Image 1: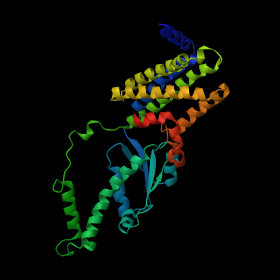
Image 2: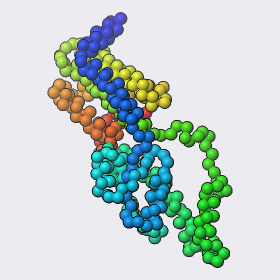
Image 3: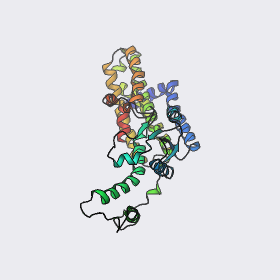
Amino acid sequence: MKTFRTFRLLFKQNLKKPGFYLVLLLMPLFTFLLSLGSSKGSDTIPIGYYIHDDGESGEIIQEALQNADGLFSFICYDDVSFMQDDVINGKLECAYEFPGDYYEKIMAHERKQLITRYTSASSTMSQVTDETVFSLLFNHAERLAIIDYLTTQSDIATYNDVLYTRDDIEAAYERYSLTETAFSIHYEKEPDSAPLRASDILFSPLKGILAHLVLLAGLAGGLAFYKDPNHYGYRQMKIRLFSVCIPTLSSACMAFLCLVISGKEKRLLFAGLGLLVYTIMVILFTLLLTAIIKNSLLYTAVLPLYLLFSLLLTPVFFDLTLWLPVLRYASYLFIPGYYLRIF
């Protein structure tokens, strides 16, 4: 009964703090802003590309990218500098620069540094677009490779251009690649039943934002220890624990509600479990930090710095470690990163 009375008194004290309401209100605010942006945004993510000179390779590349159907839409540019500006300004997720004789160089075994990719600090999908571009370009490259092998390098059969031409080989390859003669893949569930859309990517920072607001609430709860460090109450572990648990658990409940409202979290039970584990991590981290740092000025100085570097090194809006890989080891010092990687 005494424990419950203590918890109730500390909870009432938090209700008198404007910062308590501020953190709780910021969560639905960010959720609303992200949902508003996703509803107005396009269903595809724009990717720019530029091809040097006009030639057979350039026409094939342009046709492959323009006919791409999926998460990304490819925009052709006539000027590299304009394309670079759009990447810097955030109008493009990233951009690619191709040589006009791309396939000729591929067949001549000049395969290194043929394509230049332009990204900015806000680019988060560049590795996915690399795979997408490669798969689109490889469709024609594999055709050229098999023709070259059968006509010039094959030890299996001697090429006879009287019996069959390169066009015959290409037609045969096309026939076998488009039918189920060689092999086929059968999906147990339609792959298009849950397509990835650009609005899903726009919502992706939500968990990171909520995680940092929960962390902010927990660290702010630790400030109570420094108001009167000689007070008997704050020397009791029960009081210290409640002072951190109340704002942290309250913000975690609001974060879970925001995930439900967003409609982007399909596994709510798993999301709730993840938030619970993360909340415990925040509470333990705050208790450890307040036990190590005895000076209130030092704690208040560490708090914003820790949050700032956590936002920079944890992939919320952008991933700084992609530009400075040496910082990847430093990113393991920030607990929101563990929550985002695991859950």
